[in-house]
Length: 502
Image (cartoon, rainbow, N blue to C red; front, top):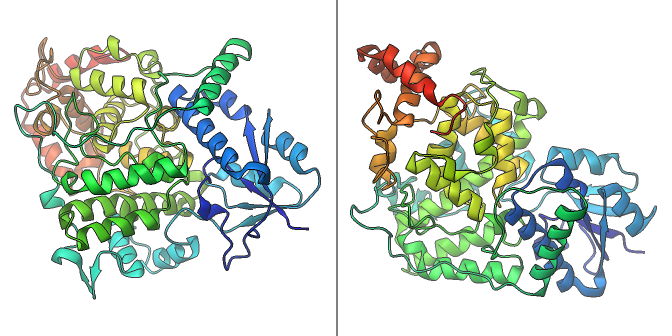
């Protein structure tokens, strides 16, 4: 009898059921899917995220029809026992350490190699082992992946003559414009499955004490393979060409700009990264998009997403407990509740409202508005990582642990990045319109109109001057601090926001 195959809720695309050379499931293997309510009891997830994940799982079950046994249970253990009893089961390598521990603890479960990523773990370990103990720089990894996959390459030369087209992809938004004017992104239409999921979430909140944060609906992200492919086509045909130049910019009235909105589809397994980067390269070779936009997009997936996935497993379980800057302040209630209306600083209020309303912002608001504020306030990096995991529709343990603990909060002391990513208000003013009409002035570091990011930046530099002075990428910041004649007043000004919304 063919073994049953267990699909987790982020393994929803056809690739996870396709037979291969890795002793995968048979082409006609019966499928098990388990909807475990305990997942939503353990963490207070964004309601839009819970809705998306459950909708995607139920859409996949509807596609599989009689082939799937879909079980709703309190825990995965209970669900698997109900679905298969003692029968043997195969499952693809899960995407979190907790899930991997679970499947290894279950009798009769055989774990197959991971899918949904570009390279196997063994290949990454071999590459990392060849670095001689040096820092595993993302740029070096990106070059290696491009060569390994012959991705955006012309022979042995990178397409367009450069590995990295950042010089063309860091433009501020055009001044005086509210939006980029990019074609609208793909938007799915909700159906009866979405309606039933929403009713179940209402019932869980009403009867079972399960709590969520944020707002839900209408659904903005694909919940099926068909929708994900439509979103990919829409991006490639209408938005990719304009993606590159302003990928690091922010506009209050245009939070999506030219971004793809494909991260949740990739992380649910609805799209495979290989098909996405190949399609982007094909768009460039067909003359439908410039090389700098295509390279910037490919770097997000083959360079960054793949890098984060590999580092999650390579760094080991202890990585989540790192706190090199010794930040221990708790997250304040207004931040936990996504209370954007309590915040005066326009940049933070705008971005927090985007998270509250959609469960998504692009990478620069995440890093330079949300993450930077958390770093400046000295919030506990584990709590910050958990917040990002819960509150973003594309957030998973493997995604947020390196991205937040490593890059955003510098809690690993530089294992992942060469410097802490934080700035004063001048950066936000240059790269956005979020300072327009704000009660604070990005250039003021003291006084009633002092910008919380500017005072926060200098307070951070003062607090960690020994660490920053020893890093050639941040030593100039310490020199700048020493030239300030009002450091004590800056520090007093900054303390007004301890625990309070800025």
